[in-house]
Every structure is written in structure tokens, then in C-alpha cells.
Image (tube, rainbow, N blue to C red; front, side):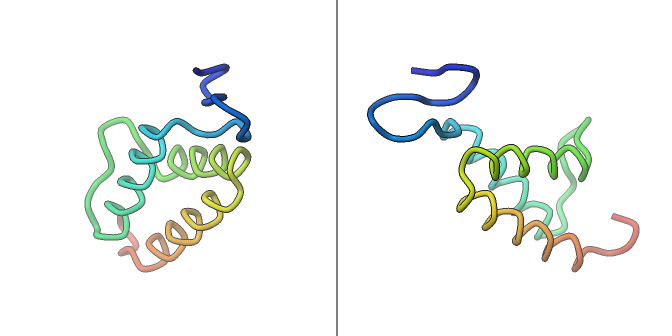
Amino acid sequence: QKVTGLVVNGAAQPRIPREHKRWIRAAVHNVKNGKPLKEGETMETLQGYLAYVYMVEPDLGMRLFEQFQAAKSAAPAGA
């Protein structure tokens, strides 16, 4: 069951849907491997999604954000 885009089943805290987690994790992985983002996406929008994940699930958000920062700093200047 979802409310405002978050899964609210059971006694657990509201959380990001699994599909969104997979998409964001894949986007971070693609940045890390030098692959381009999907059309219409920028590094700033991905950073915004990561902030959203961090707001809802801090542990996962921090882990993904650290991977993103490492990938961004290792990327060539023109990417």
C-alpha cells in the first residue's frame, strides 16, 4: 500500500518503493561505470533523488550518496 509515493505496509516505517530503489541504485552504478544517464536526466536530478532517499531512509541514502560522490569525483571533467 502506498501513500504519497511511499510504501506504508505493516509496522515498519514508510519507505521508498523497491522499484525506485533499484532505479536509483542502477543510475548510481551507471555513473560509476561511466555510462550516460537516461535522456532528460542530469547529475543534479539524480542528486535530488538521492536526497529524497536520504530523507526517507537515511542509511540507504547515505550509502548511495557516498557511492555517487565517489563516482562523480572519478568521472572525467566533461561528463
